[in-house]
Every structure is written in C-alpha cells, then in structure tokens.
Amino acid sequence: MTTAVPPLVNAWNEWDPLEEIIVGRADGAAFEPVEPGSRPQLRDGSGGPFPTGPKPDDMVKGANEELDHLAEVLKGYGVTVRRPEAFDYTTSVKAPTFEVSNQYCGVCPRDVLITIGNEIIEATMSRRARFFEYLPYRPLIYHYWNNDPKMVWTAAPKPSMADDMYRQEFWDWPLEKRHAEMHNFEFCVTQDEVVFDAADMSRFGRDVIVQESMTTNRQGINWLRRHLEPKGLRVHTVHFPLDFFPSHIDCTFVPLRPGLILTNPDRPLREGEERLFLDNGWELLDAPTPSTDNHEMPLYCQSSKWLSMNVLSIAPDVVVCEEQEKPMHDLLEERGFEVVKVPFRKVYEYGGSLHCATWDVRRTGGAEDYFPNVKG
Ligand code: ABU
Image 1 (cartoon, helix red, strand yellow):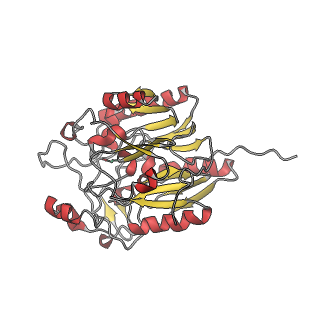
Image 2 (cartoon, helix red, strand yellow; image 1 turned 45 degrees about the vertical axis):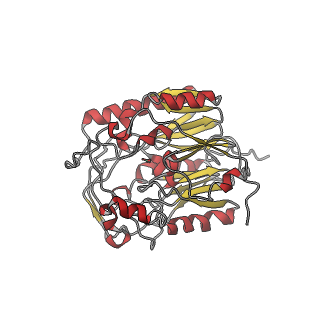
Image 3 (spheres, helix red, strand yellow; image 1 turned 135 degrees about the horizontal axis):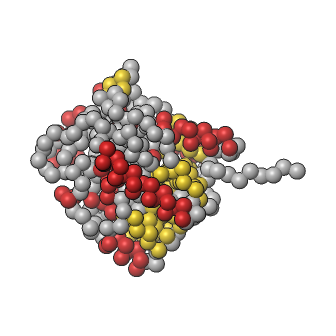
C-alpha cells in the first residue's frame, strides 16, 4: 500500500487559508545603489545624496523586530513560518555583463519567488543589485525539492543586465514626457530580454494577472505565458497608465477573496481591461486614502504611500494590515474581514510592506476557475 505524501508546495491564489509562508529578514542589508534600473532618492525632496553601504545596525534591528513579530503572529494562526538564510548584501558584484557596487536585502521574498500550484518560480529580477537575491532562499527551495516529490522548481532565464538592457534616459524624462508616453508602457527596462520580478504577478486560481511595469517587460510576460499556458493556466496582462513608475502589482491591484479586488484610486486600469473582472462577477473596490502621505513616508523608503494596500491575506476573511493604516482597517472591517494589525513601518524602507515581505508556499485549495466568462 502506498501512502500519499501531502504536498509541501501548493498555492493557487492570494487568499486561501494559509499553511506555510516565508518571512524576509533584514540582516546584512545595504542601501540600494544607483544603477540603470533604479535611482533611489531621499524622501524629503532635498535631492541630497542617497546613502550608500550597509544599513545602520539600529535600522536593521528595528526592521527585524517587526519581521520577527509578524512571524510570531502568523504562527499564532497555525501557520508554519520559515526564514531565508542570513546573507551579506553589502558586497559588490562583478559579472561578465555588469557590475554593481553592492546588493540590497532579503526583506522582500515576494519580488523574487512565486508559488503557482506545485511550482516555485525564481524570477529573472530586473535590477543588478538583486540579481543574486535568490541565493538566501535556495536552502528553503532545496527543502521543498527534497521533501515534496511533486514540487516543480523553475529558475527563469537570467538576463544580462548589461547597459543595453536599460533605457537610462527614462529617469530624466520630465513629467510632460511621461504623460505623453503613458500609453506606450516603456520604462527603464527595454523589450529585448526576458525580464520580470515575481511581485508583478497576482494569482487567481487558473488565471494569473501580470502588470507591465519598470520591473516586468513584455518579453517577461511572453515567457510567463509560454511557460504557464501549456499547464492549463491563463495569463492576462494588465496596465495602469497613470502609474508613471510602476513596480510590483501589490500596491495597485490586490485580490482579497473570490469576487473582491482592492484597487488603487490613483492608478485605474487601462480602459477596457476592467471588463475581464466585471464580466466575471468581480467587484473593484477602491482603497481609502492612506494614513500617511507620500512626503511623510520614511526618509529612505522608495515605495509609495500605497504600501497601505500591501496587505497579506491569511484566509478569505482574515487580512494582516499595518497597524497605523486605520482607514484600511475600517474598510476591511466594514466588509466583514477580521483585520490583524501589526507594526511594520520600519520595514517600509526595505521595499515593501506585509505582502512584499512574505512568500506564501502553501495554502489549502486548488486551481479554481474564477473567470468562467473569459473570451477567446
Ligand atoms: N514594492 C512595492 C512598491 C509599489 C509602490 O510603491 O506602489
């Protein structure tokens, strides 16, 4: 008699009951360097030089306390929590096709890895400082590979990250030019190589939504389509033309449970793209104004005030939110969610909030079809 081994890797959407998750860690983090894919700027508008080198110990300690606290809260809900290895991101990289003065951090696994069903995909990444960010997660990936015989492991093609992969003048375009170009969806990465960050995807069972952005180009989406569609999935590209610096979909378009997507009122979908959702019975619910305005975000944070939307669903009716985001708590509670509130502001300067700083590996549930009226 053979005994079926329960899967360790299984996640088809963003909301089914959570069983296992990876929470990032801030150890060894460095300030993100200036490079063709990124021009970090101080949040005070001073135009002063962005710091370089290791993040100060107190900033690492503060972020780690919040990440550790999140891990404990999730364990309290019965979730298995694992963490990446400590890693020294302060070292430079000299590859045959690019160099970068230092790397970044291991706080945001969401950008690097995605679970789709029984498969873990390592993204190509889009920035030089993040090229090797998969390494601290490899011991975890080997754990799943060694212990789940049905787990499939895919590393997407590695891009060159050479100078000609980037459109460096993008950073100097005046606002009028960005406005004029907003429907072309051309950003700092050109269209020749396959480029994507995992956080530009959102999972809806048989359907995967991908945002065209600064961190995911059309070739990246083509690769995902050719990879996923033979497995019976459907890949849909979405665009948010008023987001002039789009990077990762999880502060813009956030499914909370079947039939309900949190949307960003500053970043509406390209006209016509809402039909896919409305024709399949999904409600698009605008997020409330965040509790913190853009200019009040932490000095070194490169993300928008819409980190308020970067929530983590641990069940279709339970959502983890940053503790100061009261307007978001109120909206979700009005809609019948239990809102778990955790402090996370010290993590913001590491590129994200609760969704970014986690990577769900196992949720209950399967490949449901939430879009029965897809045309074509
Ligand atoms: N890493 C997510 C940041 C997205 C945003 O700033 O809107």
